[in-house]
Structures are given as C-alpha cells and as structure tokens.
Amino acid sequence: GWDQNVETIHIINNNCSNENVVTGRIVHGVISVPTFSIDSGNRENELDNEAIQTGIPTGLMPVKFVVTIPCSLITGSENLRAIVDYGHGILGSREELIDMDYLQRFANKQGYVMAATDWRG
Image 1 (cartoon, helix red, strand yellow):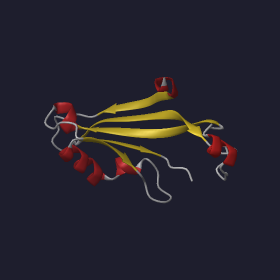
Image 2: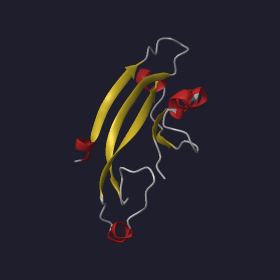
Image 3: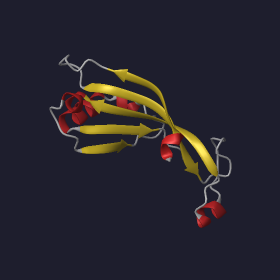
C-alpha cells in the first residue's frame, strides 16, 4: 500500500495546556508520488506526453510535506471538520503553513488538520 511510500522525518509535540499554543503537533515527512516527468531529478523539466496519454507514470519522486494538528483536536474541544491541503504562493514553500500564524489559529478554531507540500511546476 501507499504507507510504504511515506516516511515520517520529525514530529514536534507542543504543550496544548499553554493558552498561547494553537498547534498541538507538527509532522514533517516525505512521500513518494507518481511523476509524469521526463527527468524528475531535474528542476527544469518537461512532461512525458506518452506517460500522460497512457496514464503510466515514469517513476516515483520524493515530495516533502508538513501536517499540522491543532490543539483543539488534540484536547477534544473541537471535532475534525476537514483536512485542508494548503497551496503556497509563487516562490513559497510548505513552511508557509507553519510560519503563517493566522492559518494555525484558523485551523484551531475550525477543527482543521492542515497539510502542505512543496509544489513543483
């Protein structure tokens, strides 16, 4: 299964009893995902038209990700409402999810688990 393609790199557990803390857990990892690129190891790349037409990937490529779990879910003060896939802006990275405090406050208030990757392309 896909669990063989996911590696947890680092987990940070925060103290949710501190009222100023809204993110209870931060998980950093890597997932191997299908690619349809000619050379997935090259930042400047092209799509493989045959792979796209046949639906058969040219291989797997590692993609770093981060997942944040709000204190409201850990303490049970909110129910899980959604898992949100956050897309960063141009020249940004998955770290925006952690760095943007308002996103974490929003997730805590709404009961959202947030996830982000580094977009390619």
